[in-house]
Image 1: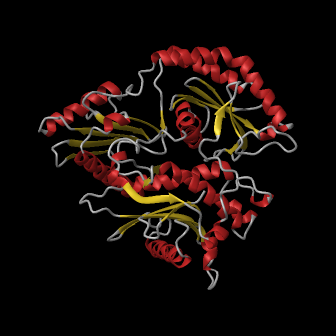
Image 2 (image 1 turned 90 degrees about the horizontal axis):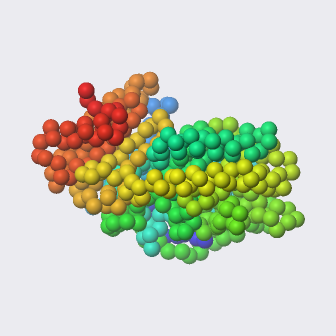
Image 3 (image 1 turned 180 degrees about the horizontal axis):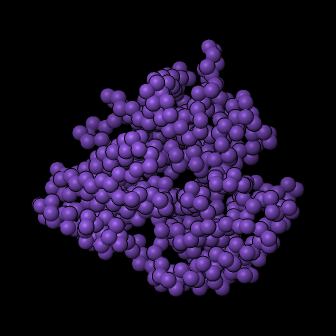
Length: 511
Protein backbone atom coordinates (compact mmCIF):
# COMPACT_ATOMS: atom_id res chain seq x y z
CA UNK A 1 0.00 0.00 0.00
CA UNK A 2 2.73 2.40 1.13
CA UNK A 3 1.38 5.94 1.28
CA UNK A 4 4.63 7.83 1.55
CA UNK A 5 6.05 11.30 1.24
CA UNK A 6 9.24 13.22 0.84
CA UNK A 7 11.43 13.66 3.91
CA UNK A 8 10.62 17.38 4.21
CA UNK A 9 7.09 16.56 5.35
CA UNK A 10 4.89 19.41 6.54
CA UNK A 11 2.82 16.93 8.55
CA UNK A 12 3.99 14.28 10.97
CA UNK A 13 1.77 11.94 12.96
CA UNK A 14 3.07 9.62 15.64
CA UNK A 15 1.85 7.29 18.38
CA UNK A 16 4.14 6.26 21.23
CA UNK A 17 4.01 4.56 24.62
CA UNK A 18 5.64 6.37 27.55
CA UNK A 19 5.97 3.06 29.43
CA UNK A 20 8.31 1.60 26.81
CA UNK A 21 11.81 2.37 25.59
CA UNK A 22 13.01 4.17 28.71
CA UNK A 23 16.42 2.48 28.77
CA UNK A 24 19.39 3.31 26.58
CA UNK A 25 19.42 1.29 23.40
CA UNK A 26 15.69 0.51 23.63
CA UNK A 27 14.35 3.87 22.46
CA UNK A 28 12.72 2.43 19.32
CA UNK A 29 10.44 0.27 21.48
CA UNK A 30 8.31 3.30 22.36
CA UNK A 31 7.41 4.07 18.72
CA UNK A 32 4.12 2.42 17.75
CA UNK A 33 3.36 4.43 14.61
CA UNK A 34 5.00 7.22 12.65
CA UNK A 35 4.00 9.03 9.49
CA UNK A 36 5.85 9.41 7.23
CA UNK A 37 7.40 6.05 8.10
CA UNK A 38 10.19 6.62 5.58
CA UNK A 39 11.86 9.19 7.84
CA UNK A 40 15.12 7.99 9.42
CA UNK A 41 14.60 6.60 12.91
CA UNK A 42 16.82 9.34 14.30
CA UNK A 43 14.32 11.98 13.09
CA UNK A 44 11.35 9.95 14.32
CA UNK A 45 12.97 9.70 17.76
CA UNK A 46 13.73 13.42 17.69
CA UNK A 47 10.05 14.29 17.17
CA UNK A 48 8.92 11.82 19.82
CA UNK A 49 11.66 12.89 22.23
CA UNK A 50 10.57 16.53 21.96
CA UNK A 51 6.94 15.54 22.51
CA UNK A 52 7.87 13.39 25.51
CA UNK A 53 9.84 16.27 26.98
CA UNK A 54 6.94 18.70 26.58
CA UNK A 55 4.55 16.21 28.21
CA UNK A 56 6.90 15.65 31.16
CA UNK A 57 7.51 19.37 31.64
CA UNK A 58 3.86 20.44 31.52
CA UNK A 59 2.87 17.66 33.94
CA UNK A 60 4.93 19.46 36.59
CA UNK A 61 2.39 22.28 36.55
CA UNK A 62 -0.70 20.27 35.60
CA UNK A 63 -0.35 16.61 36.67
CA UNK A 64 -3.87 15.60 35.56
CA UNK A 65 -3.90 17.51 32.28
CA UNK A 66 -0.61 17.67 30.42
CA UNK A 67 -0.14 19.83 27.33
CA UNK A 68 -2.73 19.61 24.59
CA UNK A 69 -0.95 21.85 22.10
CA UNK A 70 2.29 23.76 21.61
CA UNK A 71 2.80 26.65 19.18
CA UNK A 72 6.34 26.93 17.87
CA UNK A 73 7.63 29.46 15.35
CA UNK A 74 7.19 27.19 12.32
CA UNK A 75 5.04 24.30 13.58
CA UNK A 76 1.97 23.51 15.65
CA UNK A 77 2.07 20.42 17.87
CA UNK A 78 -1.28 18.86 18.79
CA UNK A 79 -1.41 16.23 21.55
CA UNK A 80 -3.97 13.60 22.51
CA UNK A 81 -3.73 10.91 25.22
CA UNK A 82 -6.49 8.41 24.34
CA UNK A 83 -5.25 5.77 26.81
CA UNK A 84 -3.01 6.14 29.87
CA UNK A 85 0.55 6.82 28.66
CA UNK A 86 -0.41 6.17 25.01
CA UNK A 87 0.12 9.46 23.19
CA UNK A 88 -0.83 10.62 19.72
CA UNK A 89 0.89 13.73 18.35
CA UNK A 90 0.33 15.60 15.11
CA UNK A 91 2.85 18.18 13.96
CA UNK A 92 1.79 20.53 11.16
CA UNK A 93 3.81 23.21 9.44
CA UNK A 94 2.45 26.72 9.67
CA UNK A 95 1.51 28.53 6.48
CA UNK A 96 2.74 31.91 5.34
CA UNK A 97 -0.74 33.41 5.76
CA UNK A 98 -1.13 36.10 8.42
CA UNK A 99 -4.06 34.12 9.86
CA UNK A 100 -3.65 30.49 11.01
CA UNK A 101 -5.28 28.03 8.64
CA UNK A 102 -5.36 25.14 11.14
CA UNK A 103 -7.48 24.83 14.24
CA UNK A 104 -5.96 22.72 16.98
CA UNK A 105 -9.26 21.24 18.13
CA UNK A 106 -10.13 20.16 14.58
CA UNK A 107 -6.77 18.40 14.22
CA UNK A 108 -7.16 16.79 17.65
CA UNK A 109 -10.53 15.42 16.59
CA UNK A 110 -8.81 13.67 13.70
CA UNK A 111 -6.59 11.95 16.26
CA UNK A 112 -9.60 11.09 18.43
CA UNK A 113 -11.45 9.66 15.44
CA UNK A 114 -8.49 7.49 14.45
CA UNK A 115 -8.26 6.03 17.94
CA UNK A 116 -12.01 5.55 18.43
CA UNK A 117 -12.41 3.71 15.14
CA UNK A 118 -9.29 1.64 15.77
CA UNK A 119 -10.58 0.50 19.18
CA UNK A 120 -14.01 -0.28 17.73
CA UNK A 121 -12.46 -2.80 15.35
CA UNK A 122 -9.28 -3.98 17.09
CA UNK A 123 -9.63 -3.19 20.79
CA UNK A 124 -7.39 -0.89 22.82
CA UNK A 125 -3.74 -0.29 22.02
CA UNK A 126 -2.74 -1.26 25.56
CA UNK A 127 -4.63 -4.57 25.37
CA UNK A 128 -2.84 -5.38 22.12
CA UNK A 129 0.53 -4.58 23.70
CA UNK A 130 -0.27 -6.83 26.65
CA UNK A 131 -1.20 -9.60 24.22
CA UNK A 132 2.09 -9.29 22.33
CA UNK A 133 4.62 -7.24 24.39
CA UNK A 134 7.12 -7.11 21.54
CA UNK A 135 4.97 -4.50 19.80
CA UNK A 136 4.95 -6.07 16.34
CA UNK A 137 1.25 -6.91 16.49
CA UNK A 138 0.08 -3.42 17.42
CA UNK A 139 2.47 -1.72 15.00
CA UNK A 140 1.21 -3.73 12.06
CA UNK A 141 -2.43 -3.08 12.96
CA UNK A 142 -1.88 0.64 13.56
CA UNK A 143 0.14 1.06 10.39
CA UNK A 144 -2.37 -0.58 8.04
CA UNK A 145 -5.37 1.03 9.78
CA UNK A 146 -4.06 4.60 9.89
CA UNK A 147 -2.63 4.51 6.36
CA UNK A 148 -6.03 3.35 5.06
CA UNK A 149 -7.62 6.18 7.06
CA UNK A 150 -5.23 8.81 5.73
CA UNK A 151 -6.01 7.87 2.14
CA UNK A 152 -9.35 9.64 2.54
CA UNK A 153 -7.40 12.89 2.82
CA UNK A 154 -5.85 12.45 -0.60
CA UNK A 155 -7.24 14.62 -3.38
CA UNK A 156 -5.38 13.65 -6.51
CA UNK A 157 -1.78 13.74 -5.30
CA UNK A 158 -2.48 16.37 -2.66
CA UNK A 159 -2.73 15.47 1.01
CA UNK A 160 -5.23 17.62 2.90
CA UNK A 161 -6.26 18.04 6.52
CA UNK A 162 -9.21 19.95 8.03
CA UNK A 163 -8.45 23.64 7.65
CA UNK A 164 -10.24 26.96 7.93
CA UNK A 165 -12.42 25.90 4.99
CA UNK A 166 -13.95 23.25 7.26
CA UNK A 167 -14.71 25.66 10.11
CA UNK A 168 -18.47 25.22 9.63
CA UNK A 169 -18.28 21.45 10.05
CA UNK A 170 -17.90 19.39 13.24
CA UNK A 171 -16.09 16.07 13.19
CA UNK A 172 -17.15 13.61 15.87
CA UNK A 173 -20.85 14.42 15.63
CA UNK A 174 -23.77 12.84 13.80
CA UNK A 175 -25.79 14.85 11.32
CA UNK A 176 -29.45 14.15 12.10
CA UNK A 177 -32.38 13.90 9.70
CA UNK A 178 -35.44 15.87 10.78
CA UNK A 179 -38.61 13.80 10.31
CA UNK A 180 -42.27 14.37 11.09
CA UNK A 181 -44.22 12.57 13.80
CA UNK A 182 -45.80 10.04 11.45
CA UNK A 183 -42.42 9.01 10.04
CA UNK A 184 -40.93 8.84 13.54
CA UNK A 185 -43.62 6.37 14.64
CA UNK A 186 -42.90 4.21 11.59
CA UNK A 187 -39.16 4.24 12.36
CA UNK A 188 -39.77 3.29 16.00
CA UNK A 189 -41.90 0.37 14.83
CA UNK A 190 -39.11 -0.78 12.49
CA UNK A 191 -36.52 -0.56 15.28
CA UNK A 192 -38.64 -2.80 17.52
CA UNK A 193 -38.88 -5.36 14.72
CA UNK A 194 -35.13 -5.24 14.09
CA UNK A 195 -34.26 -5.74 17.73
CA UNK A 196 -36.67 -8.64 18.15
CA UNK A 197 -35.37 -10.52 15.10
CA UNK A 198 -32.81 -12.41 17.16
CA UNK A 199 -34.78 -14.49 19.63
CA UNK A 200 -33.87 -13.79 23.29
CA UNK A 201 -30.98 -11.61 22.14
CA UNK A 202 -30.67 -7.88 22.99
CA UNK A 203 -29.63 -6.33 19.67
CA UNK A 204 -28.86 -2.73 18.79
CA UNK A 205 -29.52 -0.80 15.60
CA UNK A 206 -28.79 2.37 13.64
CA UNK A 207 -30.90 3.69 10.80
CA UNK A 208 -29.49 6.16 8.27
CA UNK A 209 -31.04 7.97 5.34
CA UNK A 210 -28.47 9.18 2.82
CA UNK A 211 -25.63 10.32 5.12
CA UNK A 212 -27.94 11.41 7.93
CA UNK A 213 -28.80 9.60 11.17
CA UNK A 214 -32.48 8.73 11.62
CA UNK A 215 -32.45 6.46 14.67
CA UNK A 216 -30.05 4.80 17.13
CA UNK A 217 -30.35 2.57 20.19
CA UNK A 218 -26.64 2.83 21.05
CA UNK A 219 -24.81 5.09 23.48
CA UNK A 220 -23.65 8.46 22.06
CA UNK A 221 -20.01 7.32 21.72
CA UNK A 222 -20.90 4.05 20.01
CA UNK A 223 -23.40 5.87 17.80
CA UNK A 224 -20.72 8.30 16.59
CA UNK A 225 -18.26 5.48 15.86
CA UNK A 226 -20.76 3.44 13.83
CA UNK A 227 -22.19 6.53 12.13
CA UNK A 228 -18.69 7.65 11.14
CA UNK A 229 -17.86 4.26 9.70
CA UNK A 230 -21.15 4.12 7.81
CA UNK A 231 -20.51 7.50 6.18
CA UNK A 232 -16.93 6.53 5.40
CA UNK A 233 -17.67 3.16 3.80
CA UNK A 234 -21.30 1.97 3.85
CA UNK A 235 -23.81 4.61 2.74
CA UNK A 236 -24.94 4.66 -0.90
CA UNK A 237 -22.70 7.64 -1.63
CA UNK A 238 -19.67 5.97 -0.06
CA UNK A 239 -20.32 2.77 -2.02
CA UNK A 240 -20.72 4.60 -5.31
CA UNK A 241 -17.74 6.93 -4.95
CA UNK A 242 -15.36 4.76 -2.98
CA UNK A 243 -14.69 7.75 -0.72
CA UNK A 244 -16.19 9.22 2.40
CA UNK A 245 -18.73 11.99 2.04
CA UNK A 246 -18.61 13.73 5.40
CA UNK A 247 -16.14 16.39 4.30
CA UNK A 248 -16.18 19.00 1.60
CA UNK A 249 -12.40 19.02 1.21
CA UNK A 250 -12.90 18.08 -2.42
CA UNK A 251 -15.04 21.10 -3.22
CA UNK A 252 -13.88 24.64 -3.89
CA UNK A 253 -10.37 26.06 -3.73
CA UNK A 254 -8.15 23.55 -1.97
CA UNK A 255 -4.76 25.16 -2.36
CA UNK A 256 -4.71 26.74 1.09
CA UNK A 257 -4.94 23.54 3.09
CA UNK A 258 -2.58 21.31 1.13
CA UNK A 259 0.06 20.11 3.55
CA UNK A 260 2.05 17.69 1.48
CA UNK A 261 2.30 16.13 -1.92
CA UNK A 262 2.29 12.37 -1.65
CA UNK A 263 2.92 9.42 -3.84
CA UNK A 264 2.19 5.74 -3.55
CA UNK A 265 5.38 3.74 -3.36
CA UNK A 266 6.99 0.99 -1.34
CA UNK A 267 8.55 1.80 2.02
CA UNK A 268 12.23 1.28 2.66
CA UNK A 269 13.16 -2.11 4.05
CA UNK A 270 13.91 -0.89 7.58
CA UNK A 271 10.54 0.81 8.11
CA UNK A 272 8.79 -2.13 6.42
CA UNK A 273 10.33 -4.61 8.85
CA UNK A 274 9.65 -2.33 11.84
CA UNK A 275 6.01 -1.42 11.12
CA UNK A 276 5.18 -4.49 9.06
CA UNK A 277 4.07 -4.62 5.45
CA UNK A 278 0.42 -3.63 5.03
CA UNK A 279 0.09 -5.04 1.54
CA UNK A 280 -0.99 -8.45 2.84
CA UNK A 281 -4.37 -8.23 4.54
CA UNK A 282 -4.69 -11.96 5.20
CA UNK A 283 -1.31 -13.35 6.17
CA UNK A 284 -0.47 -16.94 6.94
CA UNK A 285 0.65 -16.13 10.47
CA UNK A 286 -2.45 -15.91 12.63
CA UNK A 287 -0.55 -13.84 15.19
CA UNK A 288 -0.27 -11.10 12.58
CA UNK A 289 -3.55 -11.51 10.76
CA UNK A 290 -4.56 -7.93 9.95
CA UNK A 291 -8.15 -7.01 9.21
CA UNK A 292 -8.29 -3.69 7.34
CA UNK A 293 -11.86 -2.34 7.79
CA UNK A 294 -11.02 1.06 6.27
CA UNK A 295 -9.84 -0.25 2.91
CA UNK A 296 -11.87 1.51 0.24
CA UNK A 297 -13.94 -0.20 -2.45
CA UNK A 298 -14.25 -3.37 -0.37
CA UNK A 299 -17.97 -3.26 0.39
CA UNK A 300 -20.72 -4.12 -2.10
CA UNK A 301 -24.45 -4.74 -2.05
CA UNK A 302 -25.58 -8.34 -2.37
CA UNK A 303 -28.68 -9.58 -4.16
CA UNK A 304 -30.58 -9.82 -0.87
CA UNK A 305 -29.84 -6.18 0.01
CA UNK A 306 -27.21 -6.94 2.66
CA UNK A 307 -23.80 -5.32 2.30
CA UNK A 308 -20.95 -7.82 1.98
CA UNK A 309 -17.17 -7.62 2.23
CA UNK A 310 -14.23 -10.01 2.27
CA UNK A 311 -12.24 -7.81 4.65
CA UNK A 312 -12.81 -10.16 7.59
CA UNK A 313 -11.85 -13.21 5.53
CA UNK A 314 -13.99 -16.34 5.19
CA UNK A 315 -15.36 -18.78 7.72
CA UNK A 316 -12.90 -21.62 8.25
CA UNK A 317 -13.42 -24.44 5.76
CA UNK A 318 -15.97 -22.51 3.65
CA UNK A 319 -16.19 -19.84 0.97
CA UNK A 320 -18.66 -17.84 3.11
CA UNK A 321 -17.41 -14.35 3.92
CA UNK A 322 -17.03 -13.82 7.66
CA UNK A 323 -19.45 -11.29 9.18
CA UNK A 324 -17.70 -8.10 10.36
CA UNK A 325 -17.43 -7.57 14.12
CA UNK A 326 -17.11 -4.43 16.24
CA UNK A 327 -16.45 -3.72 19.91
CA UNK A 328 -18.95 -1.51 21.74
CA UNK A 329 -17.31 1.15 23.85
CA UNK A 330 -20.06 1.33 26.48
CA UNK A 331 -20.34 -2.38 27.29
CA UNK A 332 -17.06 -3.79 25.98
CA UNK A 333 -19.08 -6.45 24.16
CA UNK A 334 -18.10 -7.66 20.70
CA UNK A 335 -20.94 -7.62 18.18
CA UNK A 336 -21.63 -8.92 14.70
CA UNK A 337 -22.27 -6.02 12.31
CA UNK A 338 -24.94 -6.65 9.67
CA UNK A 339 -25.74 -3.83 7.25
CA UNK A 340 -28.77 -3.80 4.96
CA UNK A 341 -29.49 -1.20 2.30
CA UNK A 342 -32.59 -0.29 0.33
CA UNK A 343 -32.07 2.70 -1.96
CA UNK A 344 -31.18 5.60 0.35
CA UNK A 345 -31.93 3.76 3.59
CA UNK A 346 -29.13 1.94 5.44
CA UNK A 347 -29.84 -0.28 8.44
CA UNK A 348 -27.09 -1.43 10.80
CA UNK A 349 -27.96 -4.31 13.12
CA UNK A 350 -25.56 -5.29 15.90
CA UNK A 351 -25.91 -8.78 17.39
CA UNK A 352 -23.88 -9.99 20.42
CA UNK A 353 -21.40 -12.66 19.33
CA UNK A 354 -22.01 -14.48 22.61
CA UNK A 355 -25.66 -15.00 21.66
CA UNK A 356 -24.93 -16.77 18.37
CA UNK A 357 -23.33 -20.13 19.26
CA UNK A 358 -23.27 -21.49 15.71
CA UNK A 359 -21.42 -18.59 14.07
CA UNK A 360 -22.19 -17.63 10.48
CA UNK A 361 -25.09 -20.04 10.27
CA UNK A 362 -26.80 -18.29 13.19
CA UNK A 363 -26.07 -14.83 11.76
CA UNK A 364 -27.57 -15.90 8.44
CA UNK A 365 -30.74 -17.04 10.23
CA UNK A 366 -31.10 -13.67 11.97
CA UNK A 367 -30.58 -11.79 8.70
CA UNK A 368 -33.25 -13.92 7.05
CA UNK A 369 -35.61 -13.24 9.96
CA UNK A 370 -35.09 -9.49 9.50
CA UNK A 371 -36.01 -9.75 5.81
CA UNK A 372 -39.17 -11.68 6.60
CA UNK A 373 -40.31 -9.38 9.39
CA UNK A 374 -39.17 -5.95 8.26
CA UNK A 375 -39.07 -5.81 4.44
CA UNK A 376 -42.41 -4.05 4.01
CA UNK A 377 -41.64 -1.55 6.78
CA UNK A 378 -38.28 -0.78 5.20
CA UNK A 379 -39.87 -0.12 1.80
CA UNK A 380 -42.53 2.11 3.35
CA UNK A 381 -40.10 4.16 5.45
CA UNK A 382 -37.65 4.69 2.58
CA UNK A 383 -40.46 5.92 0.37
CA UNK A 384 -41.81 8.22 3.08
CA UNK A 385 -38.41 9.72 3.89
CA UNK A 386 -37.55 10.18 0.21
CA UNK A 387 -40.78 12.11 -0.42
CA UNK A 388 -40.06 14.43 2.50
CA UNK A 389 -36.38 14.89 1.70
CA UNK A 390 -35.39 18.30 0.43
CA UNK A 391 -32.16 17.18 -1.21
CA UNK A 392 -28.60 18.38 -0.64
CA UNK A 393 -29.82 21.87 0.24
CA UNK A 394 -32.52 20.71 2.66
CA UNK A 395 -30.95 22.57 5.59
CA UNK A 396 -29.91 25.69 3.72
CA UNK A 397 -31.18 28.96 5.21
CA UNK A 398 -31.00 31.86 2.79
CA UNK A 399 -28.57 34.57 3.86
CA UNK A 400 -26.96 32.43 6.56
CA UNK A 401 -23.94 30.15 6.68
CA UNK A 402 -24.09 28.34 10.00
CA UNK A 403 -23.09 25.41 12.19
CA UNK A 404 -25.22 24.12 15.08
CA UNK A 405 -23.62 21.74 17.59
CA UNK A 406 -25.45 19.90 20.36
CA UNK A 407 -22.67 18.60 22.60
CA UNK A 408 -25.01 16.61 24.85
CA UNK A 409 -26.34 14.58 21.93
CA UNK A 410 -23.11 14.61 19.88
CA UNK A 411 -25.18 15.94 16.98
CA UNK A 412 -24.69 18.79 14.52
CA UNK A 413 -26.32 20.52 11.59
CA UNK A 414 -24.66 22.82 9.12
CA UNK A 415 -25.15 24.76 5.94
CA UNK A 416 -24.67 22.57 2.86
CA UNK A 417 -21.06 22.25 1.75
CA UNK A 418 -21.80 23.80 -1.63
CA UNK A 419 -23.14 26.92 0.12
CA UNK A 420 -20.17 27.21 2.47
CA UNK A 421 -17.77 27.22 -0.47
CA UNK A 422 -19.37 30.50 -1.66
CA UNK A 423 -17.97 32.32 1.37
CA UNK A 424 -14.93 34.55 0.95
CA UNK A 425 -11.59 33.36 2.31
CA UNK A 426 -11.54 36.30 4.73
CA UNK A 427 -14.86 35.21 6.22
CA UNK A 428 -13.69 31.63 6.72
CA UNK A 429 -10.38 32.69 8.26
CA UNK A 430 -12.23 34.96 10.68
CA UNK A 431 -14.61 32.14 11.67
CA UNK A 432 -11.69 29.78 12.11
CA UNK A 433 -10.03 32.29 14.43
CA UNK A 434 -13.26 32.82 16.34
CA UNK A 435 -13.73 29.09 16.88
CA UNK A 436 -10.16 28.83 18.15
CA UNK A 437 -10.89 31.56 20.70
CA UNK A 438 -14.14 29.91 21.80
CA UNK A 439 -12.44 26.52 22.21
CA UNK A 440 -9.67 28.13 24.27
CA UNK A 441 -12.24 29.83 26.50
CA UNK A 442 -14.18 26.58 26.94
CA UNK A 443 -10.96 24.79 27.87
CA UNK A 444 -10.12 27.42 30.49
CA UNK A 445 -13.62 27.27 31.96
CA UNK A 446 -13.41 23.47 32.19
CA UNK A 447 -10.12 23.64 34.09
CA UNK A 448 -11.48 26.27 36.49
CA UNK A 449 -14.80 24.56 37.20
CA UNK A 450 -15.63 21.05 35.96
CA UNK A 451 -19.33 21.46 36.78
CA UNK A 452 -19.99 24.89 35.34
CA UNK A 453 -20.61 25.48 31.65
CA UNK A 454 -19.93 29.03 30.57
CA UNK A 455 -22.28 30.98 28.33
CA UNK A 456 -20.38 32.83 25.62
CA UNK A 457 -21.15 35.31 22.88
CA UNK A 458 -18.46 36.52 20.48
CA UNK A 459 -18.87 38.77 17.43
CA UNK A 460 -16.04 39.67 15.07
CA UNK A 461 -16.01 41.96 12.05
CA UNK A 462 -13.91 40.31 9.34
CA UNK A 463 -11.58 42.17 6.98
CA UNK A 464 -14.21 41.95 4.24
CA UNK A 465 -16.82 43.46 6.62
CA UNK A 466 -18.64 40.18 7.15
CA UNK A 467 -19.87 39.35 10.64
CA UNK A 468 -18.76 36.09 12.25
CA UNK A 469 -20.71 35.24 15.38
CA UNK A 470 -20.68 32.56 18.04
CA UNK A 471 -23.11 31.85 20.85
CA UNK A 472 -22.58 29.06 23.37
CA UNK A 473 -25.15 28.13 25.99
CA UNK A 474 -26.16 25.03 27.97
CA UNK A 475 -24.06 22.59 25.94
CA UNK A 476 -25.19 23.94 22.58
CA UNK A 477 -23.15 26.04 20.16
CA UNK A 478 -24.07 28.23 17.20
CA UNK A 479 -21.54 29.57 14.69
CA UNK A 480 -22.65 31.89 11.94
CA UNK A 481 -21.22 33.93 9.06
CA UNK A 482 -23.21 36.88 7.70
CA UNK A 483 -21.55 38.34 4.62
CA UNK A 484 -24.45 40.51 3.51
CA UNK A 485 -25.37 41.93 6.88
CA UNK A 486 -25.77 45.63 7.60
CA UNK A 487 -22.77 47.48 9.01
CA UNK A 488 -24.20 47.69 12.53
CA UNK A 489 -23.71 45.05 15.19
CA UNK A 490 -27.35 45.51 16.14
CA UNK A 491 -28.45 44.30 12.70
CA UNK A 492 -26.21 41.24 12.90
CA UNK A 493 -27.44 40.44 16.41
CA UNK A 494 -31.04 40.73 15.26
CA UNK A 495 -30.34 38.30 12.41
CA UNK A 496 -29.02 35.76 14.92
CA UNK A 497 -32.12 36.23 17.10
CA UNK A 498 -34.41 35.53 14.14
CA UNK A 499 -32.46 32.40 13.25
CA UNK A 500 -32.49 31.18 16.86
CA UNK A 501 -36.23 31.70 17.28
CA UNK A 502 -37.15 30.08 13.98
CA UNK A 503 -34.74 27.13 13.80
CA UNK A 504 -33.45 26.55 17.35
CA UNK A 505 -36.57 27.04 19.52
CA UNK A 506 -35.04 30.23 20.90
CA UNK A 507 -32.08 28.41 22.46
CA UNK A 508 -29.62 31.15 21.50
CA UNK A 509 -31.93 34.13 22.03
CA UNK A 510 -30.73 36.70 24.53
CA UNK A 511 -34.16 37.38 26.02
